[in-house]
Image 1: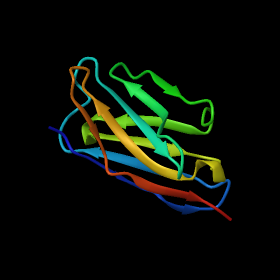
Image 2: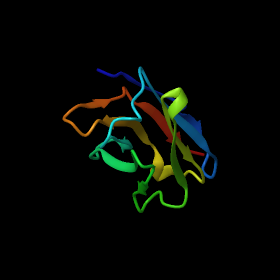
Image 3: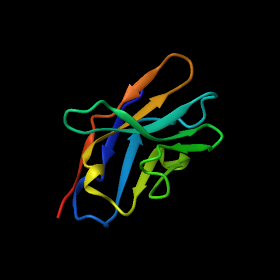
Image 4: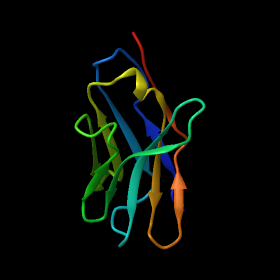
Length: 118
C-alpha cells in the first residue's frame, strides 16, 4: 500500500504560479512500469489527465497546459511536483495525484484546490 498526500494549492491571480507537491508514504519511483500523474476535476466536469511521468522520466502533457506546466519528481523525497506557471481561470479545479505501479495497484491522493481568479 502507498498513501499520497497533495499540497500546495491555493488562490492565485491569473498569470501567477503555484507548485503542487504529492508526497508518497514510501519509495515508489523504482517499480518497473510505474507511472504517476496529475489529474484535475473542475465543477461539473470529468476528471482529466493534466500531466504524467513514467519510470524512465518521460513526460506527457495535455494540450491545455503544455508549455505552462512542468511535472517532475524527487526520488530521494518520494515526491512528485507540478509547477504551474501562467495560470488561467480555466485551470481552476481540484488537482489529484495518481500512482500506478504497473502491476494492478493504483492509488489517489485526497486532492488540493487550485483557484485562479482576479
